[in-house]
Length: 103
Image (cartoon, rainbow, N blue to C red; front, side):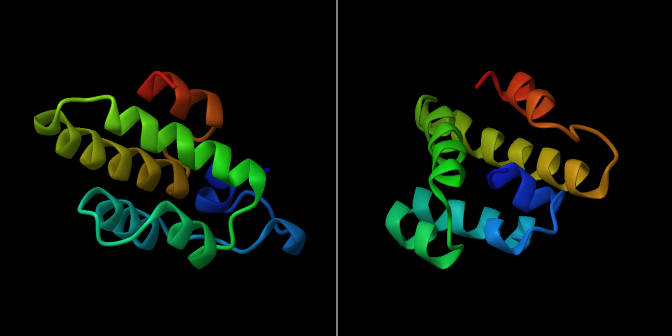
């Protein structure tokens, strides 16, 4: 399992942790970008596992690798893709999400 599974809620296994709302996750990512929360606070708030953290780090790195002007577009695209995946319309697998963002 992992972060994407928890965002998409593809597992019912309580050992993995509960569903993470896409809007709440993206709000936390926005606050991280603005320097209002730390990565550690996000990990604690969402009770992320080591695997979740690996996926979180990949998303953070993808955004940070971009010029500041492109980060907003990345954030908006990530939000859109996660919402589509959560609803089961498109980008429903980790592979599709990774391909979409080159991670």
